[in-house]
Length: 438
Image (cartoon, rainbow, N blue to C red; front, side, top):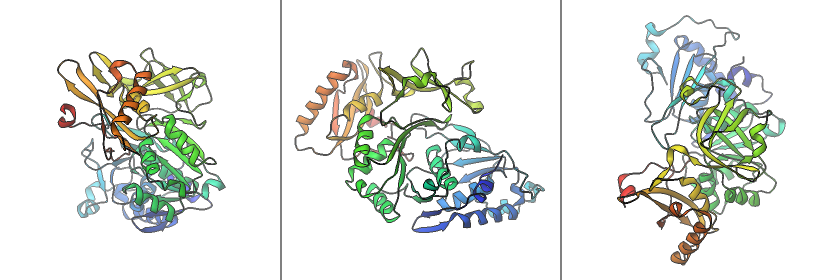
């Protein structure tokens, strides 16, 4: 078992991190991480709650604490830490001087602690929950090659989320450069990515649509394109494929709870039906009687998932799928349905139909309270051209009637200037009372 620090020391070359107008070599962060360990022996085998300040300090802490601390909690802002005895990093003056918390460490490169990494879910459809991973499970899909070493990755996710951490670890362990553009508007992001000659981007389909809307994404020379965090519909895959025909395009199915599951690189939405019987994947797959996708990773999953795990070890992802021809397609989340007169409507399914219109750039479907039906389906859309809004809505509704059941068709379509996303890059599906009743 090797720690992150040991693996980085074995690389022939490490990259450069760019953040907030500053740049620093990863080799410098490795040195700072070693200093942290020697200056803070009380942290050995402790549990650390890692608060986020900026990317360089965050990466330095990851390098220092993996293999050194028993647990690392990657703490998003405003999310409660589940334990009260954690040491908070960066240390306060009192914590740094508290002799009662100090332990006598063994300063040996071979004395590696098996660290648990804890991450909170984004809380898109409910309260955030904490799940643990090992360094091995987090880096199961990370690759190294001379070609990957020459990449410059863009970080468009928050690094303390699962998807963002995957980008950070891939860049670190391949010796590539990394540019933090997560907290910027799309046009500013594009400018940063151009300036740093970015060649690889991982983002949610929602973020990709925002970048496409700038009209400037094609100015980049992308070699690697990854989509994750949401359902990758065929329209966004096709748009990216047309814009970057030579790039490696893939969409990833993963979750904070179970880790990386599937990597699809054939340019099609969903995944091949044959994967349900494959023994060559990092996870075993099956579909339950209720159409839930079940996954069985090849590593031990977090104990928190025991209630979602069947006797064969398959974890219920709570993602609804359907089998169409030779493809398994994602429909939506079991926890996010709209109840229309007792019928379940999956917002993601309706959104995919809405975005089949070439003029619709983004869509968000949500419920509206109804005294008669319980809830009704409402949609917000952003459009590229709204010269005749009523005609556009009519065309969209005709397409909906051809593909959706009557109760799934939006009762109202609103053309809006923008659609909100949560900090993880996904559509913000938390509704306020005004949205539910308007």
